[in-house]
Length: 147
Image (cartoon, rainbow, N blue to C red; front, side):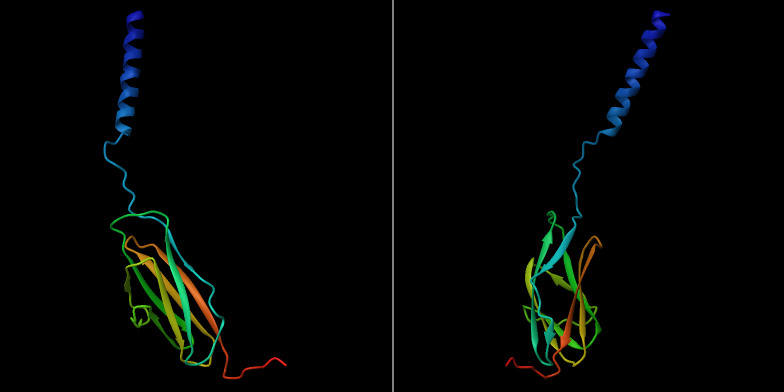
């Protein structure tokens, strides 16, 4: 009976050791996808036809991965206008452009008297997408002066 208990204890110990070793991994766990956000400074709410609004942007990354790549695109559901990057690149709606820096400026130029909305999308190479929207009210060329 004593011999049986020793064999049973040894079997339990070997099984526990086997489970422990099976759960260990000698490889490093390298995270390749980190969440991120697009932060902007406050942006003007009113705009006239032909006027340009500056949008100061910072890509805030939760972590770093050397292989991370980002793209930027926009869509304009309301109004008409033009969006360009601070390097002069004029964006076409829904076309993706490489985003190779974390601090940048966008310039939106109004081309209509209507309310205008632009949705800016930043996407990384793992498929994560961050959407930021901007809405501008038209000034219609009428300006009230304070008396």
